[in-house]
Length: 260
Image 1: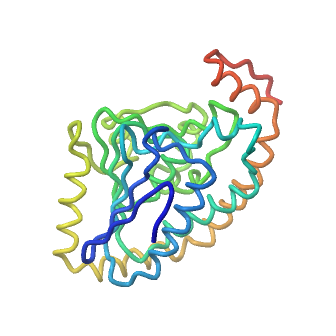
Image 2: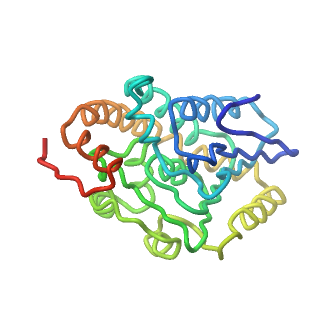
């Protein structure tokens, strides 16, 4: 499979998916969202793959949704179409019949952070910048961000993180239970590869079966949350606060919200 915004490499029972828009810190435009969904759905059919590594090319894992694409007057991002692909990728990730490991360096924000949290194991470098920062432009988390946060840290802490949009480094994220391990700068992918090798030297088929047992019972809730995120995001994209938020972002000024 060949893609415009990502790459997939297979080596035996290991696959590596790399987000590949380094010029924009792997910010996700409509093409990338669709291609991630397609790639993860394709991996469902790759029965020989038992461990998947996910990483970003360049300076970051992913800066989240591409705000410039949202503002592009020549090719406006259709929110309803985009949310279909965002929901596809989240469900495909959560139900993958393999162990997933996220290797995080630089920023993992917004939808990028949702993708990270959907993985079974998350390794982040100590100076990473992890943020569920949709609130900064008047949006709600998508990509099952609500679901993955609730699974990792529970509802009360999930609300606090969503509402604050706080940026966390690797140690802060580990302390909250958002990630599983912290490494020094430049060492996350090396550590992720080590963990992948240990899984592949273990009874990984049984591990995948346990994952399936634990995840299958939650798929209905995941689908319900994805539907709510889609409808809410569509409404928020049309709100005055969102328009003010993205305009302030582009103009590098503090936004003035009215709760409308």
